[in-house]
Length: 424
Length: 91
Image 1 (cartoon, each protein chain N blue to C red):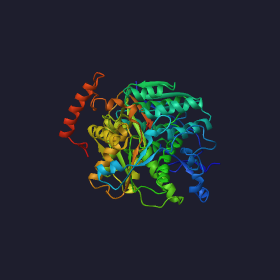
Image 2: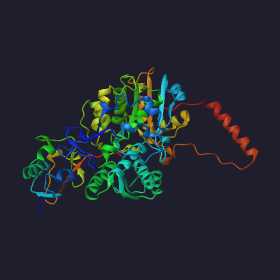
Image 3: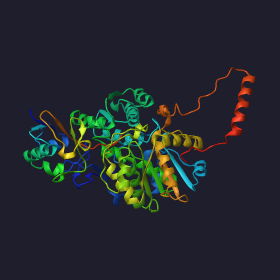
Image 4: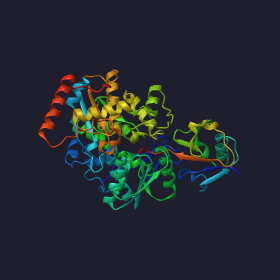
């Protein structure tokens, strides 16, 4: 049972059947999955969703697969947590963390898009999958392909963090480090997809892949008790997830599953790679590509394919864009860890840092509900904090030595009370 | 010698399957205009209007995005490689 009607070009409206094609042959615009929403009415309900297992496939009626799910049966349904400690530090009334650093099995939001793409690849008859990746996507493709018994080729920029590299290699894919930045990898993969008949998940399976990102938004709405946060702050790299969270909110509104509170959505980028935030600030929808220079490598995409749709969603919702310097990103990573016990990667630090700036500038009111989208896990990017943390003290195994240490510790505590990072 | 234009899959329906087309030109705009002249239907795929490409068309000259160069007015010479590349999702 599927509500999918086919694919349609977002730019010119040209229609296509479901297949491994990602750009319109008429105008080069991206293709989007079309659903029969009228047929869903009365059938896709809160009860129908609540009756399904707690993984991302509980929203399968709103996902583009025809048969049974073939990947990600344990992915999704990550914690949505009220962040009371952060609320106090930031001086806001109602703050939530949607925590995909806990997304199984490779700890990022990418499980969502990959679960759909791998299922679709199998449905379309591919035996090899691949991706262009800044790390997280490669990890997820490698893991899900291993489970599904598909061959995997993952292509990454040459300078990724070791955790991201090992986090793919352990699953046994063929990994290729490309001597260039992500945009170079992306371009090469477009040519590879042309030449080899593989399912490159974010190239020729892109229309299906991107739909998986909606499950992030569906979960936020359901976990909040079938309502939407007023403000959602989301990181932007290629521009996949932000418009899809907004689409998820709109689909739930249209199906009558949540009330329309006119949710606003905000884009967060690193200051060293902020083409979308620049466009939002300038008030135009032309994205000027950049050469990325930031520690936030997972979101260092200078030529975001869906940047235009991020700008549109932000504008339509009444949201805004904000960026964060590398120092602000590291401060925010530490703040989130020390208040809420979540260790995120720089993309998450970027999102929290941008949220703080949006609150401080008055763009986000302090008395309305806010959801911060955490999309990746800090254990994969230890490099960014390794020199930013106080190293542990080493002592001999003697109580005298520990007593001496405690005396020093107490003296320090008396001098410097608990402090809040400078960027807050 | 000539300018080589690399054609991606979505456009090969228009080029009768050719994945590379050679033209003589002094700028990117001239090269693409020659391409459009040779193949019916190419122009509306590449250009929104004269002088302005469709939003999702990326053009590279020898591996550099023309938006980092001089856009459509980027000068090119014999032996240069021009690639037409569709946009791709993030990763």
